[in-house]
Amino acid sequence: MRRLLFSASAPVGAFILTLIISSITLWAFGSNPFSAYGDMLDHAAKLETQVDILNRATPLYLSAVAAAIGFRMNLFNIGVEGQYLFAFLIAAQVGSLVSLPGILHIPLIMVTAMAVGAAYAGIAGVLRVTRGVNEVISTIMLNAIAISGFIAWLQRRWQADQEQFTSTTLGTVPIEESGLFPDINGLLEIFTREIGQGKELTGLLLVAVAVGFAYHFLLNHMRFGFDLRASGLNPFAARAGGIPPKRMIVAAMCLSGAVAGLIGMVELAEGAKFPPDPIKGLGFAGIAVALLGRNNPFAMVLSALLFAFLDVSAGILQNTQAATKEIVNIMQGIVLLAAVIAYGVSRRVQDREEARLTAEALQHDDKNDKNGKIEATT
Image (cartoon, rainbow, N blue to C red):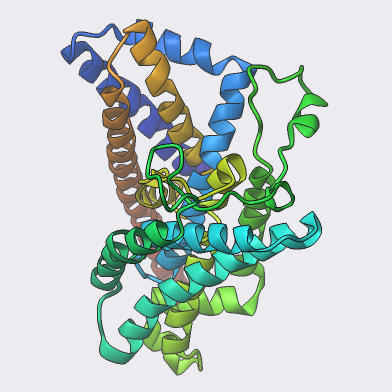
């Protein structure tokens, strides 16, 4: 019960602290906190808004899993952004060049995205084990090379219309219908009403669920996951136990990049091509989601839904003039700040409690030993 209370105190404390700081921030910017929260909750109560939240949470969750894999190995893969955008572009181009049945077309695109993401992230892993280059530095550089180099160059070469460069013709050649992941509106409408306003619940949501379960199973029920966690906790002890640390670093980076490659598939299923201005920032947002979810596959679901809820709420706050849309970015930062404070305080209190209980147990053992010696002497 005590352990359960400690576990629950951190998220509850973070939630309360978030509400307090966010309310003060809204009030400081001249907004009514109660009106803003009311508009956000009323908007989220609509089925169509919930579809938007799930669609937004799907790539955020995939990004969080990609970052969490690196974190469990004590690696900071800050290159998820470049990995998913580069994989998105290559997969969109490959998908547009072939005409196959859907049962082959869709897997080809997804495997291509995962392979490109894994290969690009693997570069940072190889640099770490062969040259000692810190993965933070290498992935930052690889982000710049991917976004400002390869993507800028290849996107122009692969334009759908080489003669006209307008906002409607920019982007790769659209993929045929057989290569687009279908929506799962029918599955959701079994439990709800018909989804209106032309909203479509992305089928990649099922892929994200599968990735989450695979991540949990891999880390907690397979030898590879044990080796990964052991190498992250203590690489010297892991090496003594026969775990090759260099191989694990490269494998962790490749696996992280493979999951990162799936992030762009949500936008590809919606737009059928690599657009001129793809959604950016998902890689960095995923790091925040992973940190807030403590790298736990189930806690990261709640974290992704929270961030998606805040993203979707930005528009309604601007429409109702309850607050500016920029306040959402501030609130996301407040959530992280509150979580860091709450988890830090909870951990410190828990450590003190464990130390007190340990001291009492040792004192009790010493007293029993002394009593036993007295009885033996008597």
